[in-house]
Image (cartoon, rainbow, N blue to C red; front, top):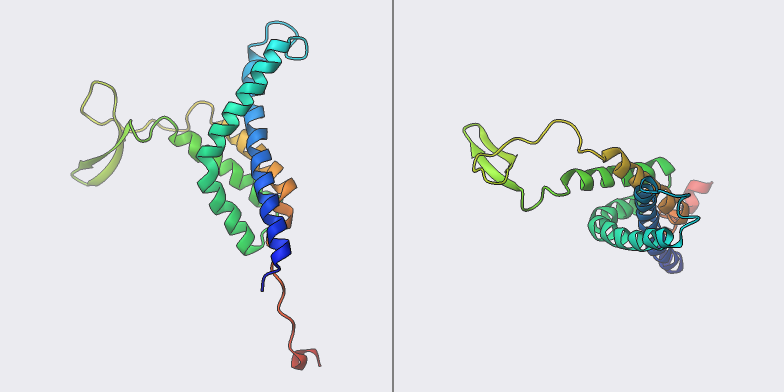
Length: 181
């Protein structure tokens, strides 16, 4: 059974938690990028740099939210249905989603195509000006640790706001009178 009021409150928490999580990830990425470009004392002393960080946070949070909405929705829905409230699940889900999105970023759909070989079908990258597919490079893309860290931060922020109460809207079935005797 479902408690409608708790479900409604949890849906509000989910929306707020997701929004704050993508803003935190965008802030992490923007702050790190512009912090490395700092010539003077940093954004604390330069109002223009602070404004640039603020606007780039908004833009990057919008992009992160658009890209991660569907995979995050599946992860959130799974946690709600399974009543998983652990910080490990939410943080690792955020990191995995960020790593996967970063890993395929720039490769889909324009540079990735479906090629056929004698052994079967393979996914290969195309290079500009060539018709022969080249395999993907080994290892992770540069910046994967930064993207994964942003996902970890987003997962932690989501857990603080909504993840700790995952599945709290389910009502336990009352035990039968025979079982209580």
